[in-house]
Length: 174
Length: 434
Image (spheres, rainbow over the protein chains, first blue to last red):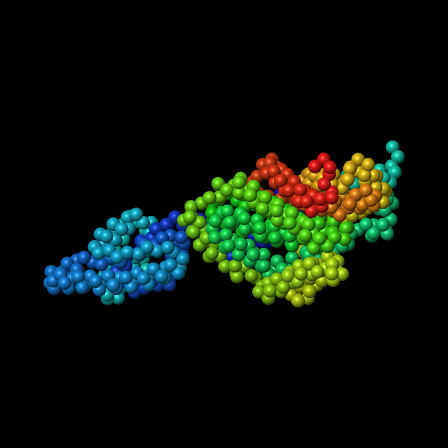
């Protein structure tokens, strides 16, 4: 068979294979990513998803992204204690409205990039609930400024650092 | 023993055929050596040699080789392969069906080896991505290539030879062999689905993931030379249109192919040295040698003697169709269908001269058997060898017996279906026993 094959095609197949190499997937790319579920917590520090993050996320093509906005209960409790429950409710309503906007923009962006997206708003602890919600996920994508104040910092926020230390799965920081 | 010209011609033909089957010596060398022996023994004069070489077949093959080789440089066929992969949307069943259909259609207009050479890398990539054994896809590609090739005058060398010898046109092939090929393709796809359907099921999530990964391939990046790509598409369409019209324009198929080749070479400005270098000269010399070998059998009267025996032992055109179809189908599965067709053509011509048979349906019987018989064994046709050769190189394999089992099923079904359709098209030929 080999002799007959080489008689028939000579070096044509090698040439075609090398031509195909320019645009076909490599062996590494052929292996499907084991990452099926990605957890992406957001909070008020969120300033949109950067393009470099979307490019990196393409490595996990086909995964479902769980976009979750976490509203800190501690702040709501403090407002309630100082200003009363009416102000706390108003604060929560405004926060949820803002969270809805963030999630809508994020969902559309990720959906257009070809991902299936599930979004939700959670009221709770930015640290504990993040760790709890991430427990059944394959990857966490987290902003370096998650949970910090609005001051610009290039290093990891203390909460992001603790999540990184305590969580048992890989984290992709942006 | 007296070595009469008949015996010498027959011996040379048998020995050459045996050497071609043996494959230790290149088939072009065998055919040329056999032809030289005939000329050396004076079986054929130089004028007879020129008379028997069918330049219609040789120039048609040459013209199509030039067109295909020039078009290939543009990335046109890789572009088609990626588009096909994307259209399958990650569904293995669609991959099987779509690649089989695209291969069949491409094989109907291009040579089968080129078609399968260009489709196979894409099929292997997709099957690896799906983590599915590529065997069903590659097997279906083989069958589709041989069935698609049977559909047109330019699809398979036996059809080119038959057309050149009989004067049948492109539209004759398309109207008779085209429907047969379509029905046979449907039958084959049903059989393959029944055989491999279960293996080709994957979860919806995986399908989505695969579709996304394939969609990441950029078909435009396959186009190496955009102006050449456009010119190739235009010339290919022009050539196909001219094939449709060649009878009414008074052009021979070979003339159409050479006109197309000349237009593409002039327009593309591709280096003729590089393009002509890629013409499969050994194949053309193989044809030349074969025509001389068969010419020896014709000139010595051996073909007429075989035709006489057939005339006296075969009852009517319908029975002759049955015999020619099955003989050529089985023989094509075992040995090269090109020398077989070369030998069968003068036999059918002689049967026509006798007046005992309607020669027209017999050409289709030969085309049907010679083209579809290639599916019988792993070495039945060039496309089989090429695809199985690539499989071997890529670490996949199928044994000769495994292929034979599948090939026998497909050949029996497609040839029977084709023969029934021929009898329906030519009802006057139906033998009384039926």
